[in-house]
Length: 323
Image (cartoon, rainbow, N blue to C red; front, side, top):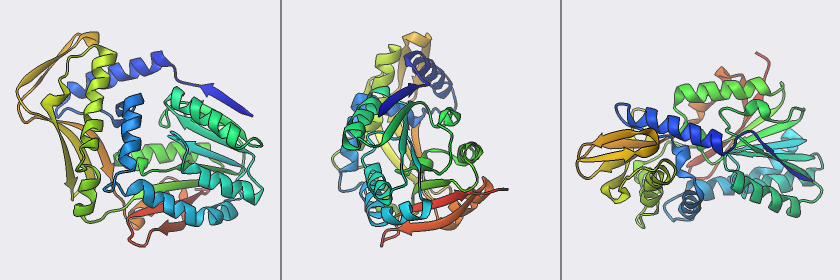
């Protein structure tokens, strides 16, 4: 059985985009949230990024899940698997297969902001797993955690290192909100990119083929289309920087000349000086001890930790505890 629940519609997304663009482009320094990369073209570009030789996170996390999915199923005895920011749910099939083989799993709940991507994934999963109840939730994992189906024996998967797109205060709020909707004993399966040599990190966000640069500029094309703006994407160059103090990668767009952009739907003019940078993504990298501390502060105990032989990526299995 496959169903789709909608807690976001086109009007919600349009309003959120307008608010984010107005706030972000009138701030100093200017910034935009990374969620606006992901229209249909942006999603295609990101899938291409995950196959690039420089982009290690996806294949490394997949290898960890492939090796340890059976252990995750055995430890959690999951009745329901929830995936936040599910996209195509490709890697999640490793978990679904293991949990179904274990004989405990009855339902899968993928949550994503993209109704079209989620609808396709739900249909495909319904065909692939005819005995599994699949309930897709169209929503934002920041705003709609309380819309997740209640129950017991839930495992919430938040994979891909997406936790790194939240700055520390946002991570704390998110983990606290997630803990508040889980019962003691339920689980969080968290994928986290780890601190490593900048020589490995930076190329993952600035590949030789220029796919990440095109992905970064896509946010300007989204604003052009949705808010009738007149950005010239080619008037901005892609920049990826490693901040060693904060231990995160920043993706930025740097203006190649003095320019002024008009955003008709907002009746807003935005000036960019030559060399001025617009931050489009923060991607924090983690250390095991620091992540364990953040989880503990939100009511989760780190029970198991798996990594690859190079220690490039970590998968944490944390349990909601009574505080």
